[in-house]
Amino acid sequence: MRENKDDFAPFLFADEHSSAKDMEEYCQQVESTALWGGEMEITALSRALEIPVEIYSKQTIRPLLIQPNQANGEVQGEKLEKVVRLSLYEHMYGLGQHYNSVFKKEM
Image (cartoon, rainbow, N blue to C red; front, side, top):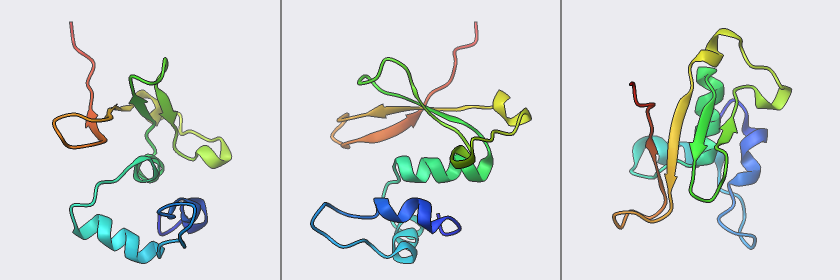
């Protein structure tokens, strides 16, 4: 996120009436506190690791697909075999909105 500030800075607003958070301060909070990441951090990880991410939710028919290098439409061929799958839970166990990893069941 630090290397691509222009891609992520527009999403650092708490609401439509507030000013943007400082990118460096935000990254420090994510790194050093219990602050949970979201789609912005998942996108950054997908790009950094060059691995697509599928996000499953009860609100969508198909999973949301986040691809590495989505901005320029490139995906590295060999990495496509690896996919990180996450499920998005709106409110579960009193934790609020959060992600869990999902694995294909081997038969």
